[in-house]
Length: 549
Image 1 (cartoon, one colour):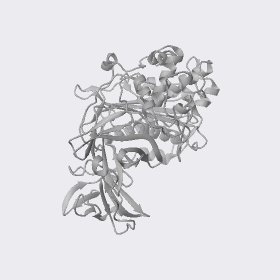
Image 2 (image 1 turned 90 degrees about the vertical axis):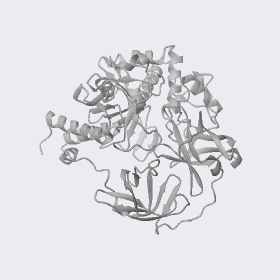
Image 3 (image 1 turned 60 degrees about the vertical axis):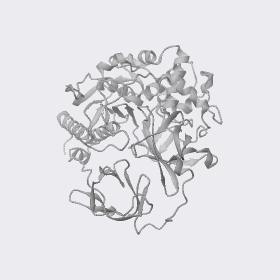
Image 4 (image 1 turned 120 degrees about the vertical axis):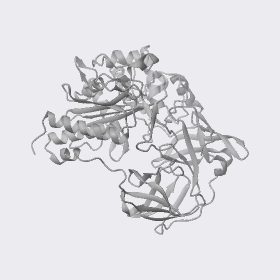
């Protein structure tokens, strides 16, 4: 096959954007592809304001969230180059009031790499300084350097350090040090009410307490102002592409470097392992090991109603940015576009052909999951069946069709029946054979399951199981369920933490535990009434028992 020309490339990119926005239900999106020299492709799709039918245009601004962490990291390194601070220095050298009950002093480098052992942060306080100050009141977290643990509050702390060292507000600082030198003239360094008319409207699922299913209604997201170093920037796609282009040029902007070569290397070096394929530098993820020896940098960004993605193949000299005002996986799309174009440029015709393929059918599933699953705990009574229907897998119980199963990922599905839509269906296998199915606090097993079938009640389970909510648009609610003798905190998207007791069961204090090990997050239940706890304090945020199941 001949190499793609510009028209071929544009058609493939437009198709990918159309597919991904349609399948995710995202109202609008903008994409820009850049080389080291400038933007070569632009795509806009859908609406910036659905009700007013205002289309997304090339100048439409979107919030881009945590991609801003890379901007914060760049400024820290700029100031180190200028002799104003040291990445290896303790945070208290610059913020004497900072305290986090850590077994050793936390350094700026610990914060930059998300390895300080801090909580993620829930944005419980509208003020950055107040939220960071609350760290001193929490139990000790993981020792710094123990593991990667993504922390927004860590980058908020870095933003405060930047302000303290320079004497300038974060928004002013990022404009003078990055936005202006890179000619990001329309980008904004903080999110304020004055900026709102220029932004696309952000949209979130109508139901904020359960996994989002394709086709469910969206509503306008809550609006907030923010200026934290963890992500408070807005731009259109061309402007954000200018930052990606700086990465392709290894720290250079239109009029010279904004990072010296040594500090660009410091920004992008693999400093902490995230998983088997990913490392983190300072404010950027990188693919490990490098693909064909090439450096691939990426980061996602999420705000209330907005999703963004940046992927920069430094070796392939190509980058893409994606901005969206709905539930699009923007980072995955940015990586998909860059990977497709770089592969096509290198003569991999099968990658280009695959990019023109048909839409993935989320109804299709693994027939190995078909079978009967016996209820192992009392709720709900009766077995369930997974059947293969004409369009894919289906869930049945007592002869009643509960609905089609929408595949989220391997062995994770969603069902829209009102009794089954709060949690995903999670399957566990023994080899290739399905052995267990769980749904919130419900647990089912097949004959392939050979483990224990009875468990002692979870300590404190009767008092703490339930639904908890706060008036916090970022982390609005969660549920606690008891399953197989353990307490599990389940987030609205279906992610789970096992709750490990800290101290005696009477303390009702737990530490979160995910598949990688204990987290720094602490959950403490308080205020007993008629055998139930009314409050759940998640690190720095109070939640209250709610009336909905």
